[in-house]
Amino acid sequence: MKAPFIAALLLASASSSVLAGGVAFRFGSDTFGVSVAGDMSPESSAQLDWLHHDDDADMVALGLYANGQRGAVSGRVGAKAIGLEGDDADVNGGAVAFGGDVSLPLNEIVRLRAGLYYAPDATGFGDIEGYDEWSLSAEFSLFQNSAIQVGYGSMEFDVEARNKFEFEEGGFVRLQLRL
Image (tube, rainbow, N blue to C red; front, side, top):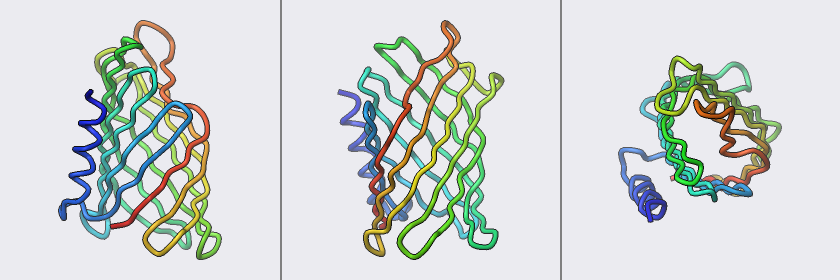
């Protein structure tokens, strides 16, 4: 019951002029998610993500980033606060992760992307003692305001009572709409 409510709330936020930027839908083999992102200034951005896992686990992340460009490569670095509620997995807590992502255009249609985030034990709370996330993908522009991203990635929590809780590991597809 919580998952549809959270998705509706994120979609409502996406239509707000405060976060004018874009909304994305992410599909994995065991996960579905909605992301809302926008620029706060030319040099900074924010992103709100909600992901639901089939094993009745929900993850919410709010990130603040410094945007930049070096030659053709563009990217962002920053921090994101991540909260996890896993009913079936009996894992609750969160962490503050640090990292970023980069993007390299190959031509006007294809772009390569990579991201890496890490949360040490010191930034975890609740059952969470750390967090690791990475992804590699290719993005294909559909039109000037939409793209589809195909990639592979991992989101993994270090958990106090056991070794790991793997939220996502495998291929994903992400549909991005720029508003």
